[in-house]
Image (cartoon, rainbow, N blue to C red):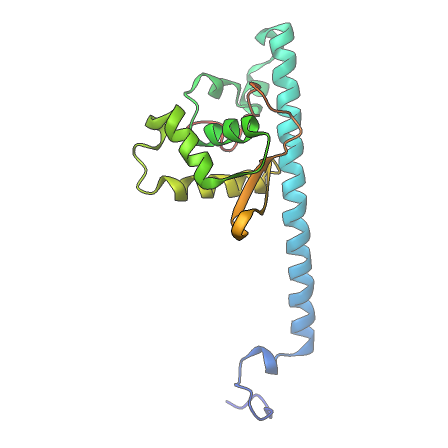
Length: 174
């Protein structure tokens, strides 16, 4: 089946031969996808802030102000669960107050809560994955440190210290 002439050096069905309209659609779709991913990060950050506000009000005025539907929305019931690796990574970043490497985060978790990493084949890989998610959620930022190694810094709006991070993704055992 002939799709028309091809220019020398192009392989039929490749991008070099693609219809300009298809390329425009692809560029538009890519721009929209990038925009949506940015929006998702902002929405995730806002969700965390609102959940933290609701939980703070519940602490001040008692859990009675939360109905069952709102409890489900803020994952309030999950607070009784044992904190997992994600929460431990948050805690280490909050307490560091300076950029810190994934290896240092892993070492601190190993020092303070070794049971959390005991069943992980590659704890450093696990910590790197979690730190990447925290960056996606807008809770941490990643930058280049010494020798070009990535370092992580806590940046979430809902503060640091001993405050619990918001419920939702990553707040329970990881």
